[in-house]
Length: 234
Image 1 (tube, rainbow, N blue to C red):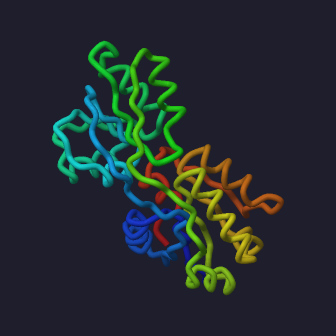
Image 2 (image 1 turned 60 degrees about the vertical axis):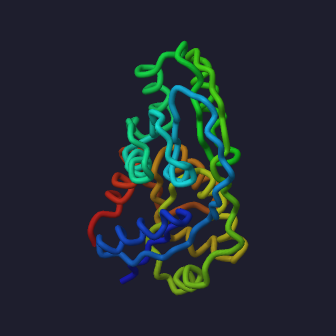
């Protein structure tokens, strides 16, 4: 019986997700859609640092600056990287902006928003609408992967994949571009798409058109624990 699960998350997070998929009894198949690379980063003066992803936390040098992280996983990464004062929001950009509105003072100084290249504009606009000055800085760049790993292609050709995990709208779009380029869109259409949020689910559904997933399921919360709960133990 097929047991393969495509993990489209980029490294270094993909390896951790793969271990957790394997612990549930499924066969993880690494198929990262993006390649991440840190960018040179200098800490400008700010009252607090806002982190929208674990990738951003990994890319930064530690600083004695209050941190608001988008969710618990990003908060844990920031603490592991040496940030001493870290608070977690409820898992998405809207929750992060709301948390900033509750716990920070627009008159106390600017907010430093560390993001991937091309990300964070909507969050910055939300924060500015709440009266904050925002300094948006690129901590890492995410580029489309050049191709899918051959092991992932072989698993799809052999009908071994039952589900695909999607963590962001961009990774869903890039993964489908790679699958279409490899001639494997029809193969993945017979699987389930498991999405970390409604936005990611919408991107995955649009990207596979004119084909369709066998099913699209959305995590109850925008975090990895809830996403993997969709899989459950095998």
